[in-house]
Amino acid sequence: MSDARPDRAVGEAQRDRGAGVDWRLYLVTDPHLGGGRDAVPGIAYEAVLGGVGVVQVRDKEGDDDEFAIHAVAVAEAVARACTETGRVVPVFVNDRLDVARELGLHLHVGQRDIPFARARSAMPDHLMVGLSIESDAQLGAALAGPGPVPDVIGVSPVWATATKTDTAAALGPEGADRLARAAHAHRSGGGGVREADGGVGGAAGGVRAVGIGGVTPATVARLAATELDGICVVSAIMAAPDPRAAAAELIARWEAGKSLPPKGEPA
Ligand SMILES: Cc1ncc(COP(=O)(O)OP(=O)(O)O)c(N)n1
Ligand SMILES: Cc1ncsc1CCOP(=O)(O)O
Ligand SMILES: [Mg+2]
Image (cartoon, rainbow, N blue to C red; front, side):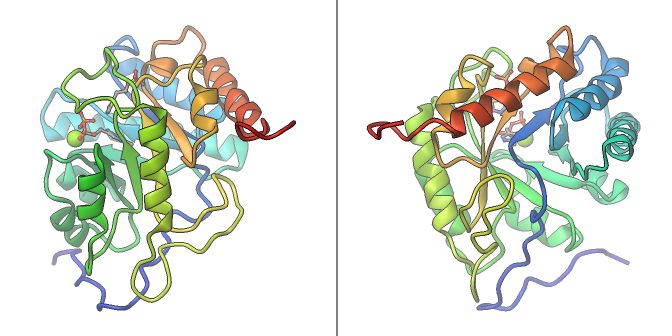
């Protein structure tokens, strides 16, 4: 029997699947930058101990069976770190709908992957589906309704990056801020994907937004000054000599950036 659920009725509020998630620091894994597939679970474990709140398993090589074995290893490592820290860290699968469904993990899709609406309707209702957004037009289409909207958007790319070169043009922090504001302003059906809650990851309501592409310790502060709920990194953690320390530094810089007064206002 299929896990697919019918789309919610028009006018019905979408459930807030991302409530309670710490969106401030989202790790997307990469086997090459991490020193090979076998090294990735250990890096994800260390990264969660350092403060990563969301993990996405991304591996463009191998078939679905190989990917699934890899994703299970990463998810188990994240679960171990969660047991030790008492945190809850969701694990997303990049691109591969069938693997996400089979393993009961969340899914992230891009504009050139399976269409969001198809992914959403094929995924169990309790699991999140994230979507990459590269432009105002793409965000407008994603929020146009009346169907479900993404649980989180990856605003992509904020800056050009050597990690992924087949991207749209860089949005810059101003573009990322504009898209995050528009995502937060979205209210689905009967009241909103989430109400403004003031919790971890920002006080805004609407659809959550993380910024990806070229985020490093040197650029975090610039994004902390935007409406984004968090930052999303690959190389800043996967290629770091000490992934736990790298994650801790990124979170510390995000928090330090958040405590700075907005531009133009006195401290
Ligand atoms: C959180 C997040 N945002 C954006 C992306 C990029 O997705 P996509 O454009 O589909 O590119 P690939 O990662 O599949 O190469 C992402 N993975 N995660
Ligand atoms: C997966 C992805 N999607 C847009 S940019 C990117 C790669 C980001 O890598 P890095 O954090 O190393 O710049
Ligand atoms: Mg993709």
